[in-house]
Length: 102
Image 1 (tube, rainbow, N blue to C red):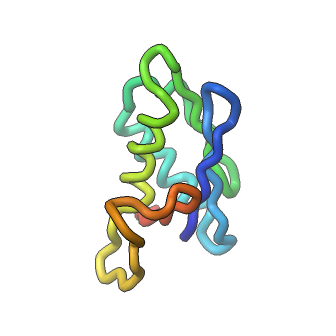
Image 2 (image 1 turned 135 degrees about the horizontal axis):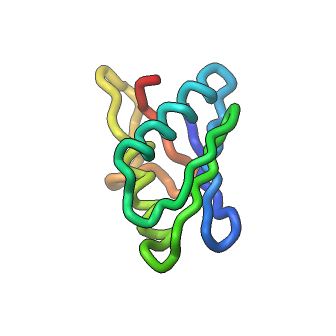
């Protein structure tokens, strides 16, 4: 599962899942994780078929802090994964791999 994170104005980001065979469950799983964790500065999450819109309060957090947090969720290792994760702790900035249980 691949996810692409794009800025959506000054106070939001759109996380789009590119695989047709699991986009909805993964969008819903990420929504549950974000709502359960209730990270400071996140105003709302709006999941859809293949994406989730996350809005945040720039007085409490920043896009870069949110990106670091989301990167941890989206690049978490999967048990028995044989996929290379790229160099460093996170995959390349334009592509994130989601490994959440729906």
